[in-house]
Amino acid sequence: MRYLFKPRSMTTRRSTSTTQAIAFVDMAGFTALTETQGDEDAAKIATRFADLTRATLQPGERLVKTIGDAVLVTSPTARSAVSLVERLLVRATGLPSLRAGLHHGPVVERDDDVFGATVNLAARVAAEANAGEVLGTKVIADAANDAGIPVIELGDVLLKNVTGAVALYSLGLVLGASETPIDPVCQMPIDRRSAAGNLKYSGKQYWFCSLTCAAAFASNPAWHASTTSTAE
Image (cartoon, rainbow, N blue to C red):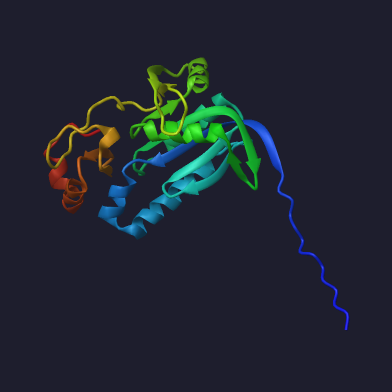
């Protein structure tokens, strides 16, 4: 008996080199939110954030993927990417504070994903952002300036797994990001960069030095909120 074997069909993966603006946007304090409100509620909020991002996109923009509490989006130009993040920040009411990192440059698109040094750099820039802050590289800062958005130069910053220091800029898209928040439980001044997390109550954002303080606040937010007037 003669058997005929056909080779398995193989899909050729095509790569396309383009120039795109890359933005990583995530929710600051998501770990504390998970600890205080539980995995189910945290998952619902992450899903809501992804849905909100999709609804914010304009032609030529794309939600490439979600990564836990973060989204990776692309936009054709540096200016359009700044506008995208600005729209997202405006619409994200009721969510934990967002932070974002942006860069513009060459990328490789393959299988509905994006790769390359531009993507990696945008991710590293996002990791440097405080909650409620949008950071960008010089090309992003120039686009923001052209759009009349105030920009603060932060100087050269060493980023993880990036060769050489990178000039970073803070975009003035969110008011109050430079104020120092106070932990409403222990009354300690908080550096957003090292904060354990944050929670929103009655339209205000509260920051915590530890998950213990976050849990204490969540157990009686009305009482703790009344003890401080320095929350954002």
